[in-house]
Image (cartoon, rainbow, N blue to C red; front, top):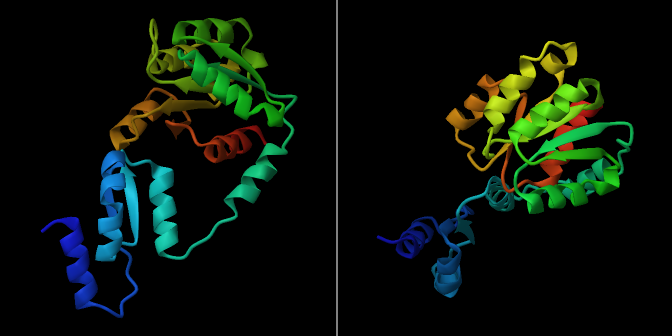
Length: 206
């Protein structure tokens, strides 16, 4: 029994129940099956690969839950972090440029490192300068795990307390635990969601 047949069966069994049926399919499949899904009574399509934000949106739609996310994001964008500095360790240049551009309204000072070794060197040279570190996990020469351990081992007080946020596409429990075991404080899934980025910046810098 495929998803369409299952949906028709469920809807016929409980015609008065307002449960929602969401089909998960690849982006290409979603286009091909959209009309067939509607005819079967499917309430929504969720493209694969799954992203947490899309999953939450579909659940909220199904449960008729609304959030003032846009307003909250706008409020966080209005925050002034001009007296704070972030060390951004990310080996992909376009990723660095995107994040810097998105955070420009917050006036947060951002300095970039193209790999973990450079990040450790920059932090070692001026540990009191940086208020937060965003650390990509997968980088050449030195990855984010080793870079975090090196920073935590530095003989300066701030090295033990500076917030370090992991950035990685791997969001399984063991991946998050590995980040925490390396000495990181928090975890951001890729692709980054600006609202969550702002929440973490607010959490650690205010």
